Amino acid sequence: MVNDVLADLRKSCEKALEALRKEFATVRTGRASLSLLDHVRVDYYGSQMPINQVATMRVADARLIVIEPWDQKALPEIEKAIQKSGLGLTPANDGKLIRLPVPPLTEERRRELVKVLHRMAETGRVAIRNARHEALDMLKDLEKEKAISEDEHRRGRDEVQKVVDLYTSRIAETLAAKEKELMEV
Image (cartoon, rainbow, N blue to C red; front, side, top):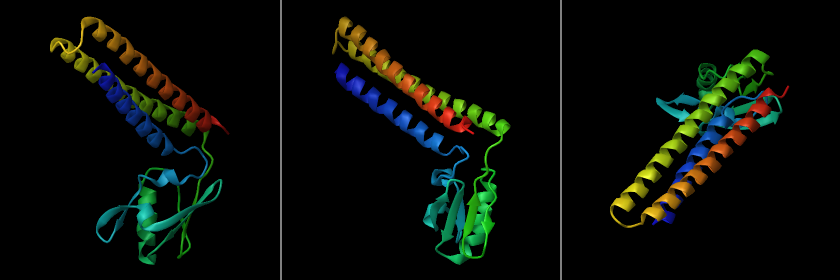
C-alpha cells in the first residue's frame, strides 16, 4: 500500500519535472531552436493552429529559423502570429518563406529571462509540494482505515520526503543548467 502511494508520488513528480523542462525549452537563449515557436498559434482559416501544423520549420544555422508555409496564403498570418508572440523576434518575409533571425540577447534581457526561469522553477516546486501533500494525506487515510500500521506510516512519510527532496534537487539542477545556458555569451 505504501509502495503504491510512493509510485503515484514519483509519477506526479516526474510529470511536474517534464512539464518544467518543456516550459524551459520555450525560453529563448540566443540560439535558434524550433521549441521557441511551440506556443505560437496562427489564425488559419478561422481557427488557431500551432505553427508547425501550417508550415515546415527548420534551423538553418545557430541564429536563423526558416519557416516555409504549406499554403502561401498563410504567410502573412504566420508573420503576424510571430510578431504578436512576445518573443522579440522580427520575421523577414520574402514572399515564399519567412526567415526568423535570432539576435543575441542583451545582458539586461538575459537577467529578465533568468527571473522568468526562477518563476517557472517555483511553479514546478509547488507542483511537487502538492503531490507530497496528497501522498501524505493518502498515508494518513490508510492509517486511519487500519490498512497500515503507525510505523509503516512513519516510514512512508520518510520515503515521501526522500522522493520530494530528490525531485526538488532535479528541478534545481535543471534550473542551474538552463540558467548557465542562458547567461552564456
